[in-house]
Image (tube, rainbow, N blue to C red; front, top):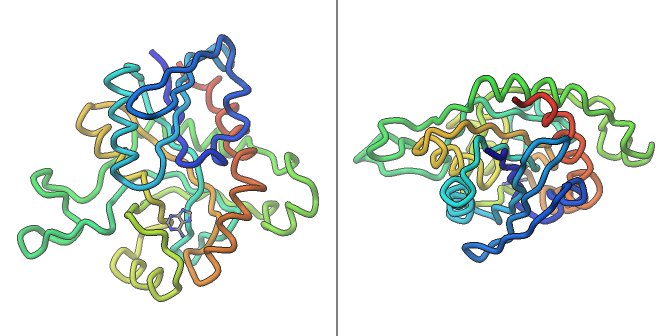
Length: 247
Ligand code: ADE
């Protein structure tokens, strides 16, 4: 059974498709899926697109149509916790929808009828992602890129990733998120949706995100720069280090 490698945007998938042997393209549910082998392992590459609904649809298609064994999300996120800076890597151990709020019927952030607000990553996959992330070298990038995005000081964090249908690009908003969810490391727009789908189907899930911005007033500038110059190469190196570790 294949491993799904999910990215949100084409830039985050850049360079991954070229790695596939025996590549095949399947169009399904209005999306492009690329199957093949990488390091001898069967994989499916897909773009979730942006936002929770699009990501949930893609994850469901990966499970129902392609019978994937696990889903790994790679891409970028906005740093929330003060320790999480641009260039750092965040590995999600838990996922929460920060814009889920059915209060006063249910506690804020709880997904109604699930009795929980947090969905856990697969612990074994988190360990393998940690090993893979530690093996990614900043030597991939020239000195100017390394200096600009402070890649040499890159740190790996593990913990809560939060998702919502908002690109967070104001310091006030980032502070409010941090206030309500002090252990949140970073914010994206898809991870928690995929985690919920994987929970429903009992499919192992994990996500690794590189921090492209601080979800503050300069996020709209930092995000596209990181996306075009760093994200694809980083994702390719990470997946290339991960696949040989999988059974
Ligand atoms: N992905 C990367 N940066 C983000 C941000 N600031 N808000 C939401 N998703 C993001």
